[in-house]
Length: 457
Image 1 (cartoon, helix red, strand yellow):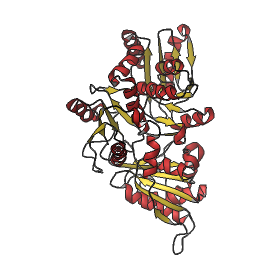
Image 2 (cartoon, one colour):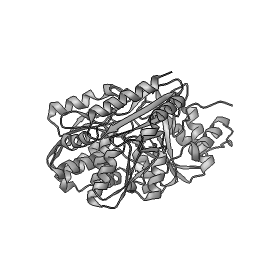
Image 3 (cartoon, helix red, strand yellow):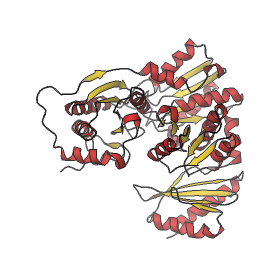
Image 4 (cartoon, one colour):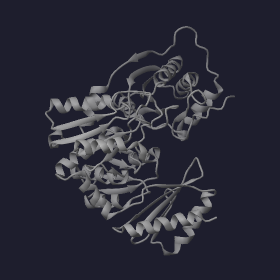
């Protein structure tokens, strides 16, 4: 039996030809249909050169398992989420490798209400069925239908429902669509802005769809992928820059000075945006960097709730708490009215409205938070024995700590600083985040101290 290495913990991702091809895509469709027995599933694909052919093979596999397939064409992952929950379908699959290099492709799978399908709730079984490849023979035409549809206009209307466009003041935005994957959505939003006479000018870069990735990997988390957006903000005197990853379920911000804004501080801004409209709401955050988010949520009458890192955990906790919003420092933002799913489009609309209503530039809004809670950002280190290294750090700090939490990795809190140290699930890497209360020197000192402890043999 062939082992399919493209199956990961939360999605499907692998090198083309070696790990994923049209035959494997077909088998995934057959397996999804056989295991979950859905009536109707929506599919879409990103801008990669192989995504369309993989999607059509996937669709044939679904059809041959008796599933009716709706194809929304070129789309981001969140458009699949929207189609699945808004049309009350049985599931959805986006063909994408998101921010991975050009030689990769993959899929993200959801069930009813766009609930994620991961290794814990079906993905492992889909893998087993695809590996066995013992599906009933298909004689003649597939029993499932195939139809191209569009939910685009309703999706754009839904996005704009998170803000009051009358609140938007004259503003100039640079938007980097990451080799064009997000371009059609930006065009759709711009068209509505024009109809409503919204005074927002959008400067588009890397806007046209091009699966050759002429502008590099669509991954703004990499410093080398940020300069085009930053330079355009400065050149055009823009109020803000926004850049997307390959399937635009994440967006990244640049302030009016072209400076990259750490995702941690955006969580605080979006929490504030929701709580200004409705207090007493629950806001979900991850344990890596927390003080700024907790401070803002408490200040605006909300209830901060900590969850383990990762989209499956955040979404589950949001449903349990009926939280209006959840945010991770990795630039994933989740919304109750978006069926608790992540969106890369909703955040920039909310931040643009917040900048307008506060009548302050993004740099000032963010710098106030950075000054109050300076942070290291996530630092990754390759360690021979991660578990032993983390235990050594815990032993060193345990006695002086005010609070220790192990919701996700090791979080240790003192009166003036705190840190979170996590171990990767897939490699010998530890991930460190440190923050302090208005003391950059202390934050830097403790960051170096912990890194030194990690490197001890």
